[in-house]
Image 1: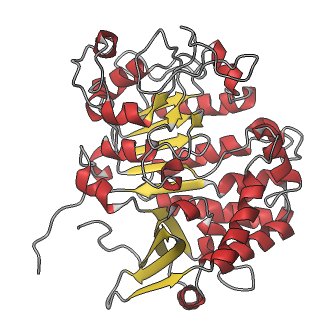
Image 2 (image 1 turned 60 degrees about the horizontal axis):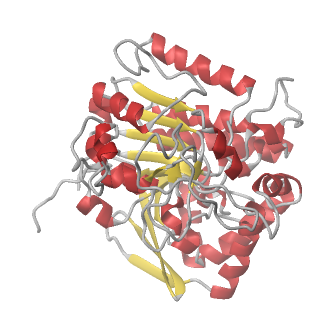
Length: 458
């Protein structure tokens, strides 16, 4: 494997659930000594309960209410409570021997990379927030963190990822807050951006378009924000113009224990498009799903991205793309080197026993880096009454999205992102302001899957 030549020190952390949860770690340098530890089940369960309570709706609670609770009474709403939760997570997840090694490395002053392959149990752990010592030193302050996908993803991928060095000069593609069908609102899906956020996204994309770094097709620069985006338009945009990267901001949904159900939400109905995902039907008065309606919203799923139309006997499936019935996902939607999905828990892949979802499907279609979230993000609207230094409306989720976009323009986005997170951590420490809560900026994950080359056995 030829990745990361000349890179800083790397720590490989691998996790597995097998009755109990096990964590192994290896420094990627001679003598490459592996270490492993079974995590204490009771301590881990208590720590994960704290995290779940800080992130998930409780019985009878709607998601917006759960997010507001997280920012007022939950683990991410107060500096003292958040630090206590981070300490509990650290003691449950990081063995003392590993902590000792991290402290020693931290004292050296050399930045390093932590490469994690989480298990389903540990998929939402905010590794960046974990405490390295009792003085509130966090892991993000001495390292950058990224996810490694399972090795099978490399072995079986349909398209080898291009190197960023050969793609950086190509234009990016943006799909920002796609307009949703009316019936999507029945399932809690609505437009995500307010006026101030739209203005800021538009300014960013126009700046890129003026310099040739954003384009839809030969005669258009990008889709207007909040307008119709379909899988057919996405197919055309990804196949007509070579891309450096793709950036999506909108909704993602998934059933945790159904690999392939993870979906992004575009402007499509059951009658307008064939797809692998079932349409979202209304709920009848007796609580059961109503009969499908042509106007029901059809999500664009990970299975679509993987299988394309290859499983279909419906002529609509291939007519809509001008392709034949055997087209696979990577042929219909070839992914550029870098992809960002800034939406609700786009990285649900890692919470499933079978690691598959949007992230793995996008990697299979050619991406080297996929940046997304490990839990549901609060919308800017939640912070509408939060005070700010500038007097302008608080838009922390938009700030995060724009910071991801800026990082994806650089040669080393993971390191660039870590520097931004350190700034947010310092503001959180200094002010305790909700607009700087880790519930926003600690949500991001980077899955890095560069092309691998075989080397002869020694």
